[in-house]
Amino acid sequence: MMSARRLRLLVFSVQKCLSRLADKCRGYCSVSLSSTPTNETDETRVSTFKTKLSSLRVLQAKVQLRRNRNMRNRIFLKKVVWRSYGKVLYFETFGCQMNVNDTEIAWSILQKGGYVRTHELSEADVVLLVTCSIREKAEQTIWNRLKHPAVLKKKHLKSSTPLKIGVLGCMAERLKTELLEKERVVDVVAGPDAYRDLLRLLALAHGGQRTSNVLLSLEEAYADVMPIHHSGHSAFV
Picture (cartoon, one colour):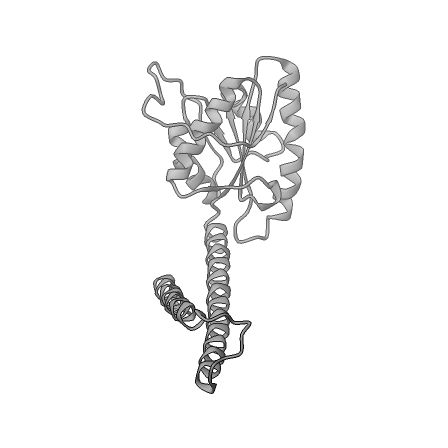
C-alpha cells in the first residue's frame, strides 16, 4: 500500500508536470487554434500535447482515488482498533447545566485515556449516564432509561468487548448500592468528585468487576482539567 508521504510526492510531481505543459501550451497556442496550422509540425505538437495532458489528468484522478481509499482504510482500521479495546464511549446527560459541565470534564479525562466518543448508542462499548438526583422524578427517569442499554448489554454478552454501563453524578453518589445491585446492570458508579478515577474504574469493569467511587472531596477536584465541549445527548428532568 502506498504511504501518505509517497502519495503527496506523486501528486506534487503530477501537478508540476501539468504546470509545465500548461506553459508549453500557451506557447503552442499563441497562434489562434481556430486557424489552420502553418505546417504539419505545429499540428503534431498540439496533438501530442493534448494526448499527454489527457494522460496526466487520468493519472491525477487515479492518485486521488487511491488517496481516498487509503484514508477510508485508515478510518476503518482505527474503528477496529478502538472496538478491540472497548474504547468507544457514549454519554447521555440528565439534569441541569452543572451536569453538562460534568460530562465535559469526564470526557476530557477519558479522551486522554484513549477513549473515542460516538453519537450512536448501538456503536458503544461503554455507556455513561450523567445523572441528577434533585427530584424523585429525575431518578425514575434514569431507572427507566437504563432499560435500553440493559437490553444491548445482554446482546453483547458473547462479544469480545461486552458492553459496560456506568452511572455518574448525584444519583450515583446517593444510590450506589441500589445501582450496583438492582438487576445487576450497572458496572461503574462514580460520584461527582470521582471522575479522575474513571479510567481505573473502567479498567476494572472491563476485567469483570463492578466498581464504585463516590468519595467527596473538600477541595476543587477539577481546577486543572480543561472541559471539552461536545454536542451530545442531554435531557432536562
